[in-house]
Each structure stands twice: as C-alpha cells, then as structure tokens.
Image 1: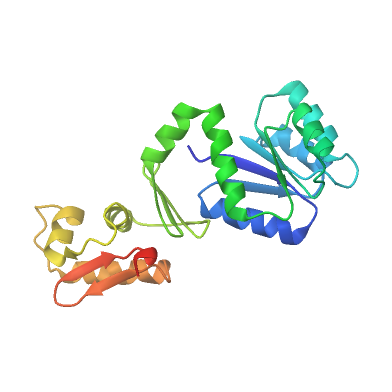
Image 2: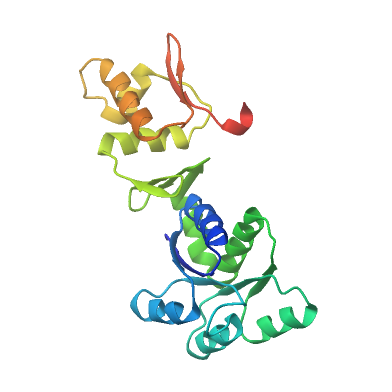
Length: 228
C-alpha cells in the first residue's frame, strides 16, 4: 500500500527535507503550512498519517491533534522544537502517537513513521514490504507496477518495468544478455540481443545515476552503492 502522509509545517526548509525523505521511501506526500489548511486537506484528501509541528500560525499543533483525535484514530507524529517533558506529555495526551524533537535526523523520522504504521497496520505493512522493492533511490511497487526514482514517479514501459524489477530483486548479480532476453522477452523471442542494450540505454536515460553497470563481454548488473 502506498501510504499518503500529510505534513503540517510552516518552515519551508523543514518542509522540503521531510517531503524529500518521505518521497524517497515511496510515500505520497502532501505539505501544508497551517493547521487550518490541514483541516481542509483532511476533508478533501484524508491522509494515512499526520506529521505535525506544534508552533504554527493560527491553530497550533496541540489543538489540531485534539480536533483530529476527536474524529479519527489516524496516526499522528508530532515534530517540534518544544523539548520540555511537559510539552511531550501534553502532545501524547492530546492524541500524538510519537513526539520527535527538532533538530532531528530525517532517517530517525522515517524509522518512527515505519514503526507507527507497523503498530497500527501490521498486516498491511507486512504485505507492503513483500510487494515493494527498494534499492537506493529506486522504489518499485510490484502490485500496481509503479516505479519511483528519488521520490518522483516515473513512466515506464512493460519491458522497462520487467527489467528493473529483475535487477532490483537480484542486486549485484550479473545477468548475461541471453539471460535477460529469456527472462524479460521470454523463451519464444528470436530477435537480436541488441534489444537488451537498447532497453538498458533507455533505462539509464530515465534513471540517471542508477548504478546499472555493464559487465564487459557478458551483460549487466545493478550494483548496490553500499557495496562499492
């Protein structure tokens, strides 16, 4: 499941950081700068999770949490510069599921998002993990055949998708051109293996910086950057 997360934050820099990291993980993201706009979003495109700042213009994050919790059990993660114990207790008592103090590591936020989703929807998260393949900035949703690169959805052809998922599920494994022809085009294909080179070229053009390497005299492999 491709979860929709709404972020209420009035600092543009923090908006951009949170949004970029969430999109990189394959989440759909909506960003608004006030609780009032968040309430409007709730009516038109309700999210699966809220990430809410406390110090907002107009209605503050505490009041927003109270309003949402009176009507819904959708998860809420509070992100705030208010770091006193009383602030955290109040945020949690008003319905927050977690409280993260600024400044924070974006990776810690992602870990907490996943933890909260796992607590609320353990079966769906388990299914999502099995249906989603992630390699660096490449996220492939197998169930609906959607592909994201650095948080942005990409249009791909059937053959491009089939080759990408093959490489992503077999990171660091080298495939010969003959293997790729059989697995992507099928055993009944009798064309030239030049089709493999052309498809790789198109994928590289769409997914620049994807470590899809040539294994000279043999074929191709998708390298894990962390292994280099």
